[in-house]
Image 1 (cartoon, rainbow, N blue to C red):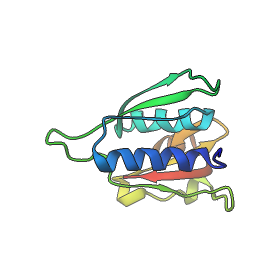
Image 2: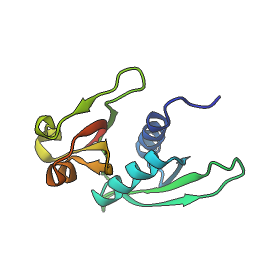
Image 3: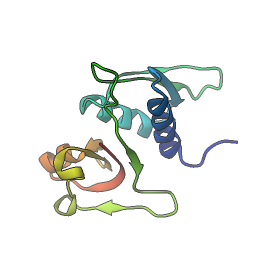
Image 4: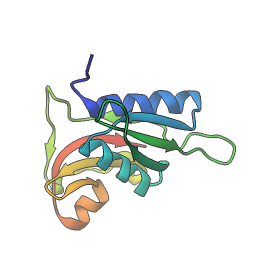
Amino acid sequence: MPTSDPIADMLTRIRNANSVGKKRVRVKRSTVCLGVARVLKEEGYIADYLPMDDTTGQGVIEIDLRYGPQGEKIILDLQRVSRPGRRQYTRVTELGRVRDGLGVAIVSTNRGVLSDRQCRQQRVGGEVLCTVW
């Protein structure tokens, strides 16, 4: 059964793989999911990601998870904020800091998917997709 929320599916797959210590996870490819993966890499939460083709034609994103030197988790929590049933839009002036700046909010804007830091620099708001710390 196809999922109606690909972002929640992506976050759940990353959360589950991270909890059991897997090095790599595959998620369904979409433009927004590629943007989320790009922000996660830029912010240092994942090692790398690679869009790939598959037999369905939609494609997948292969995400390499990151861990500390002794195997400690870099991603402590991923939470979906805006959902299909309840969208959460925020102005740049109302965009709070996640865990006092230790975490990051991922925001979908008219300039693409950006981190909360990039939103403040570019002075744009948008739909808050998720938070990571």
